[in-house]
Image (cartoon, rainbow over the protein chains, first blue to last red):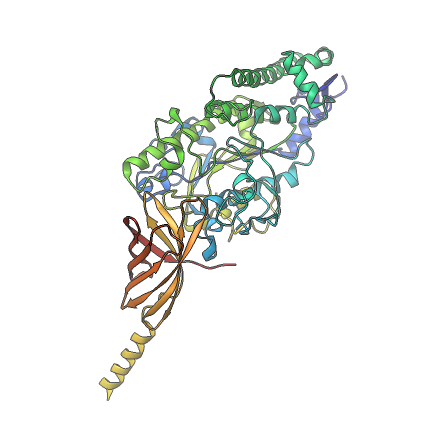
Amino acid sequence: MKPLSRRALLRGAGATIALPLLEAMRPVRASAAAQKVVRLVCIEMVHGAAGSAAIGARKNLWAPAAAGRDFDLAPTSLRRLAPFRDHLTIVSNCDVESADPFTASEIGGDHVRSSAVFLTQSHPKQTEGADVSAGVSFDQLYAQRFGQDTALPSIQLCIEPVDQAGGCGFGYSCVYTDAISWATPTRPLPMIRDPRIVFDRLFGAYGSGASPEERRARRREDRSILDWVLRSAERLRRDLGPSDRVRLNEYLDQVREVERRIARVEASNASGEPRDLPDAPAGVPDSFSEHVALMFDLQLLAFASDVTRVVSFKLGRDNSNRVYPESGCSGPFHNASHHGGREDRIDDFAKINTYHVGTIAYLLERMSKTADLDGTLLDNVLVLYGSPMGDSNMHNHKRVPFFAAGHAGGALKGGVHVKAPAGTPLANAMLTLLRRLGLDDLPAFGDSTGALGL
Amino acid sequence: MTKLLAAVLLTLLAADTAANVTGTWNMGVQGGHVVPVALVLTQDGKDVTGTIAMPTQHAGERKEVTLKGALDGKALSLSGTVDGAADPTTIEISGTLQDDGTMEGTLTINGSDRHSAPWTAERLKERK
């Protein structure tokens, strides 16, 4: 059989579905293996961590006590990642000075300014107008170099609402709060909150031929996108070997399963029952963990189909007073983050941090079970997780929480906790990571002063 | 003669290292949490003038209050009136310059009620 193109599609009237990587794409596989195509997920959890407060640091509520390979995750908010410790690169003790105020008028604007700094490590210009400026973000630097062969160079996702207009206070545009990905220093990229829109974006990436009205009509008929490509899938199956048939079936089952979950959420939210998030779009689950899991599964589909290799994902908002009942902390997020330096309240905030990091365990688990070129997806991904804030009670940007997961195609050994010298810019760690990802000619990143050994 | 020279040198040295609070301070006022507030001061001899950007009830908005006072040794005292407040309101700031260059003290708001809160401050590293 003639080798299948990596860009082969299942096509039907009004639908296209990109394919997962198959044995039948062997020349592509060989080339991809040679290129070490690393997938990138950058996750921002806002507003620091309990372990960045003085008491929290002493109790190792974020970073482990020991640097090196013999670290203990048990007291930390990372403990649910213990099954993946060999894939973890924990970087502690770094600062994000670009989120600090640089002038008197910027003092107090930490909440509004910080998210723009997380992936750019650049100081945002204080403006409420259209003349916003920060820096090119980590994910976009990678996408601009390695994301140009896919239908979508990158995709930007979020959990909380990010649709504010104008100024968000302290003389800052809401764009700085609402976007973490910056294609250029002056072009922030909008983020998608609704899983339905993400699904349509992924499976319309090659042009589905279906209008939004047609897609809505299909949903009203309770029909799947797969119904439109049945014949195309059947034709392809006939040409595939047994293992590829299994892989294709599994992949299409995953597509259908995610589609069903979105439809279920939409139906529930349209039932007229009171919602916890009354202003959220119909496709957004009220449950944080359900929403996050759905977004992760969409990211996995995006990687499986190679529609994109780069994702940024914003998990929260600084000023959110969302309650996370599953965390064991009954207080709202923002209040909990302002713990007043009290040990009992710091411990409570740590429960929320632990819960948030626990959602990443789901992603890593799924990645560890997803076959990829010479290993699993977890071997060939770099997941960044962190916050531009340190001690949320102080609104400072010192000792910020940060870790990387995945072996990034062999670029990161993992299983290590790197405790940086005091005052090290987080940008130094990010510069190292970008170089390891293949941008080895990058002279600097954000406010980096050099590379940090990882 | 040697004693006289030493005394002059010590006097000059003391004058040279006299405390000066001129500059922009990133002040953290301890309420339920630490609220960052801009304190901008100018010192002339013992006299100190400046402004404090007080947070208002509207998130993200600040009200600038003009301050006057003095630095006596390392003890700072400032006060100012909040223009346009519904009830006559004054702000009093007392503090001490620490050996490490930071300041700490108490901020009191005298309005329809009286509220006091501890504060610390460090000089802002002003950058462009």
